[in-house]
Length: 578
Image 1: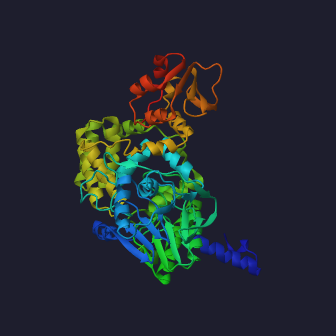
Image 2: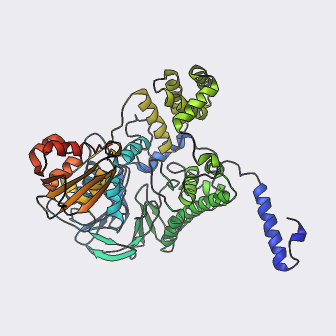
Image 3: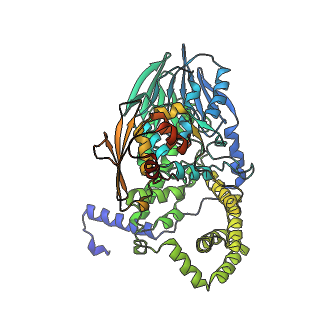
């Protein structure tokens, strides 16, 4: 644009100045990269997770270091309120034993700050047998818990175990960024309780003389809340703040976490001017100035990454190009609460791109790309064949070009999973990248992948066992949802099957339809079903959850109302859990 293109008015002159500034900004070089943290900094970060119970203020205690998350005890006149309940019953029992050293008052209520398993999995441990207490949560918590349990269990389990390095030896796994470790081992059990007191935007209540406000504050999840104790100026912020750069995206996989909503939630918290800030991960902050400064830096960092990502998207940059350029400003990068031990600005940028524009990068080559196996075949052919390609791999490793070696090895192993030269290079690359990484999820993922490829261990698809009481409380529809996503559609593309389910201990009756590879659940048993069964609800749930042997359960607990058990077994064989 030349000067003639602008009006001589003040408005036009201002417009010319703005355009010139914008054009100049586009021509500037990206800022210098923030220095990469060394693993020694992650080692020092382990001090955050020294096991113990910290007294925050009178009647407020937080247990840190007994698993990945914190559990918080509020002591009232005649009882306790527990905020977040750890990831397993085993971890929760340890925490309860520590709390019992401080108070023997009964637990009068439980509050979930959100639906993630590490905050709800140990709830049953805090409630005495044959006792019921109100469980407070935002309205979306139950459905989000159910979705992970029924539809996404296998993929989330394995990706989580990699990200948290549950099978790694000490030294490879230092800590997991927001906690010392994930308390899931072989035989771990979970005992979530269903929420009984839910709300949409805000709920005020008093339990055991403790007045609290629960406020919907979407951020790391859309069902997040914070707990505000107005008389004590104590803020329990859940996972919307912890001592690490936030996981605007987590590599275990997640639905879109809207950074603008997260910032709004932090702004809601800032106006409280809390004297005490108690996160559900990492240690509490004490002092109004310290709390305000930390929350302000946190919201500014999130807003910076969002705004600059959108700015670069509007300039036409692709997701990986944006990720390579996004760096926190020095003032924010220096904050002890924004070190990239858990989240990364680069991961966040790619998530923002996908969350706002979807999967298409804007490069037309990405509209209908070749299948990964086809790409691999052509890449290997370009190198002159498998042997020549492996030579390139080994050359990259010799040059310590580990990221390139890792990417090349993906092509080689996709074509031949038994290519031992490529395996050796990939393992070396994974270990080298992991050794240099201070971000705990990335570090643990590298090392775990190396061990998996070496055959040192195989990750399970189910990490924990739910209690019978937990299964009993989950609606039947959730189990049918689990069946739907395990249907082997390729085996029934030309079939229509209708099966009636009558549950002998309830009034629930359903018809489950498999129709040309798709499924549908209909209330009531239709007249023209092909098969019909009667079964106790708990037996059906435990069979689908893997707690009961399917063949034995079918033989002893299922009554055929129409058709044979053999035909029903063939029908159920269409559903193959991952």
